[in-house]
Length: 519
Image (cartoon, rainbow, N blue to C red; front, side, top):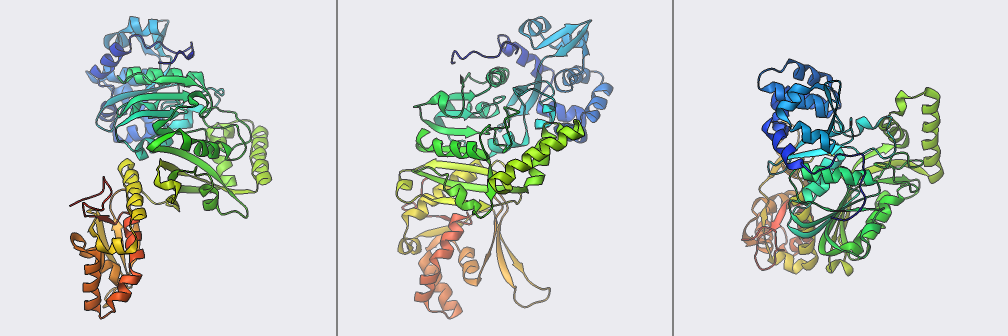
């Protein structure tokens, strides 16, 4: 671990293994919370609503009372009598290390500890500032700029979309409480975590120690400055992407003008990636008057990288300002001060010509082929998806590699299979002899739907890897009375689209990209 000086006001991780054993023995896990609180109160807790959980823990008795004491102590910030805490925790060590403090016979938590279930059933714990473990940013109100949050929707989204193949090195840039570093530690030999805020690095160390994960190399600094000259197989970042006037809160405000921080992060990531490595970010970007937002983002992609950029949401400037003013608790402040801050946000947007702000995911993949023919996809997809999407992301780039290597003749000579989760829907008026159009729909991953004509629907329906694409089109031409040469000429683009969006996969072992279906 780096010798970076970490915040002295945080607990020491010296006896974290014993504390972890005690928490697990008491059932202080994600599953244990669900069983104790019930689905309704558990869901309310994730929304920063604590009353249902308080009621549930007050009524707990018998064996459940020990778990209830821990929930009230570490998640609800309630003082708890010494006796029930001493019955479940190594209290002397917890006091000495600074996890809790005692006053007048009552034990108080000094940090939030939130049970967090890993992707393979691991029992992990995310450590953050008091009041910040539940519901993401809801606890940031009234805090100073160094506040460190726990698990929020954004951090869970990034964890879900990250490609989880085994790698030698991973970088969590802007680690916060260490959620991404914790995930990366499961499949990376070496994990480096950086943050501008030294307290965040301290919390990351606690999160890893209490979760039983290997230590990370912790470094203080902005963007890629702490790792200058180093390269990685995986880079992940949930950066301070909020486009704001100033930098009030380190965890969210980048301190650069407009979306410059996200742009700089993406542009600088390319040279920090090893060949075949991924860089994955959450980001905000401006929709500027007179400029296509997709062109804006394409200009961010560094040379030598393929990219998949997905816009998940767009807010006009008033919605955006109100969201982040509420995040900081400004709506509960003096009305005149709230109005003044609101004006500052609108002035900032007006000066930059910003009419809206987009939010989404950016994935880069370093590729030798991208030096000559980069595959850059920028799209808007506000529809529901099925997490985790890491494998979906990996397969997207594998398909891009395949399509880039195949001209139309090679494509027609290849064999394809319909992906298992795809179904066909026919849309039209009830009782009509023929449908108005046919949809192919994915039930997994991105859950895409695409309208296809009769040829494409028939083609997809018989793709089982047995016949080449050209032979299938010849058969369709004979059935429909079409010229087979003309059908071969006009169909490859439709096949490419179905492959690119994941409805079809190459089936032949000779041409399929490694990792795609073969047979």
